[in-house]
Length: 252
Length: 252
Image (tube, rainbow over all chains, first blue to last red; front, side, top):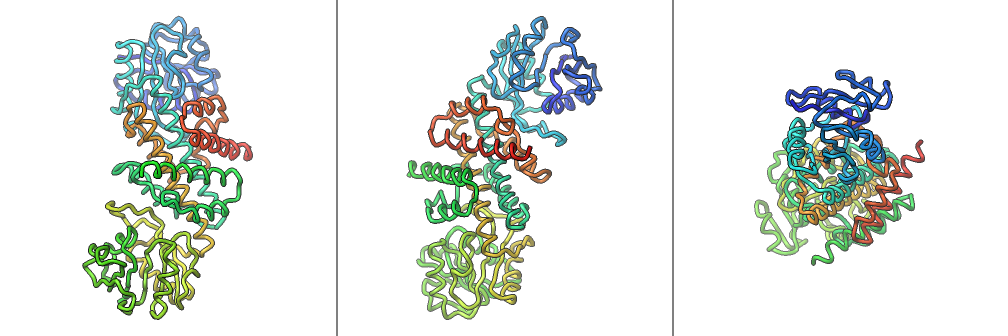
């Protein structure tokens, strides 16, 4: 059976742990964390705070913040298994081990909200074919939605992920605040939010675009900018509108 | 039975028509359009291209573009029913009739994509209580999700709707383009998009925020800006990140 050591005790590590301990095809043999306290939620398997006590395993999953990946990789110099990181932004060759790879679940993980891994795409990369097959087997514990993606592609996908997740969510937050100011529940907007996304199953975002900027309705755009209070919001509204206008102008 | 005349043959009018002709509590008696050709899809009821031939009805729904509402209202000077418009941006008093109101379905209507009205909020306003009750009855043909919202509130909600629908959708488009450049299917990002929205049923957008800007990870932000090609996109990425950083800084 494929054996795995998990390095890290954060948000992503937690979600991976919960799924891995249930697996019948992969055995999570150990979790490494910097403090015994942080390791408490991982107590269904062996844990350690010392790199020298790491078990032998087929795969070492580094699930730590990006800035710590290189240092962890150095600590794993002597291991024989494949060393992978789980980052969307970092190149594979940040890892300095012999057998390396990237094993990146493209999803937003929130603490305390369970994740349905089945639909989550895993983006895989490895420096040899055998390792890649092993990483596929490991990903299949979570999903059938597996893609082979090189570091260049993954970097760009991560930008795209920031746009569709982080920035959209910030717009939702901003809308929440506007509702609050008017004593209206944000729930009023949820059907619209859901329809916006539901459309993407049927038509492209390009085709789905509507609104004042799409119509080049500069009067409404100006009114909206006047209504907004913060200078930064005004600027973003202006630029987003310009970008939409430019998108549809150039294709006419 | 409540009788209704529909003014307009566009996207919104089309969606309203399809639902109204099926109603057993409201009777759509006529549709007005500027050309006989545009009226063809509305042939299940009487149609006219002349204001002087309008039927008497309890409610006249003006579903035309914002800039034409005032002119249509003038044409309806002699009608006895309630005159309403369906715009999110325009004040009620743009209408110059005696009994007036706003009857605004807060949704994005795409041609050829059927709309499930049940979940759509209708935002209502009227200049007297009896008219308001009539507009409620009319809205109930479509949904139970009915809100009384004044012009000021509706204006702000419309800005919020632009943010959550138009701007989010533009970010999705932009992500589609980034995927295309790397020969990756946009479908890779759909689970992330869906999870972003699914979270809103459980936690606020404020709590759901993740990503480089939330972490104030300026290195990743800079890398992403360098990866983007268009100056306008770079600027928007920068400002959205600044706005996220500012949101979480000030609350610490």
